[in-house]
Length: 177
Ligand SMILES: CC(C)(COP(=O)(O)OP(=O)(O)OC[C@H]1O[C@@H](n2cnc3c(N)ncnc32)[C@H](O)[C@@H]1OP(=O)(O)O)[C@@H](O)C(=O)NCCC(=O)NCCS
Image 1: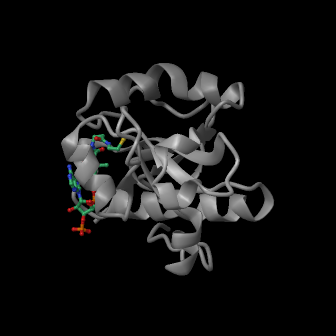
Image 2 (image 1 turned 30 degrees about the vertical axis):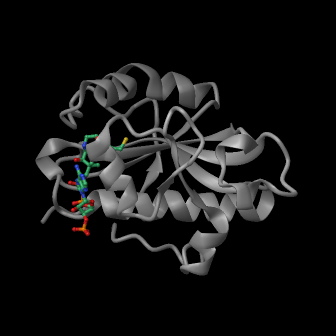
Image 3 (image 1 turned 180 degrees about the horizontal axis):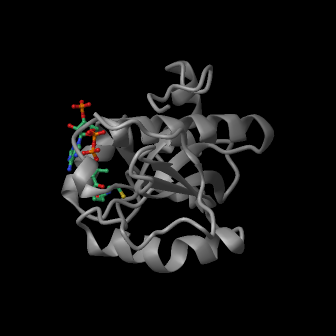
């Protein structure tokens, strides 16, 4: 089992070119856009690295977002602003050489914990994601994300209050370091 660094912000010095999660769209975004977006403050990418090999093992990116109120279940539409504030979990990926060892789970807990902490200062209703396909949908579903019932794009989300109810954000639950 490799030893990993705790999640930290992506830097200009990080070599992104060796990273390969096996999915072209996520590789391309990471290679070409992650650093520019970081510089422009339009997304925040955190990485975990192999302490021995020094290479990037995985990354997750978060941004501010909003959801049309009409996409939510009717019970969540009442007395809510339109649009509704959210945190976007844009991408989460693990290099194929490190997959299947629980690192995505740890990175997900880091991202969800970060969102809960953010929500203490800046109001947001949920963590939102746009799964690429049904396999990724199943991955997010295993963490409690549910489809927004009236979104034609089939985004998935998990409510901040549900995360708090399940103890996310009360301490930093990651297995790194
Ligand atoms: C999906 C991905 C992040 C999983 O990484 P990983 O390191 O293998 O995942 P973990 O070992 O941490 O497993 C976490 C949990 O997700 C589940 N899981 C992993 N891959 C899955 C998949 N493709 N579909 C459904 N569930 C999946 C695991 O069974 C595990 O659940 P468990 O703890 O109950 O057994 C990785 O395969 C990847 O980077 N794929 C390419 C990019 C991608 O599709 N990202 C999806 C989000 S944008």
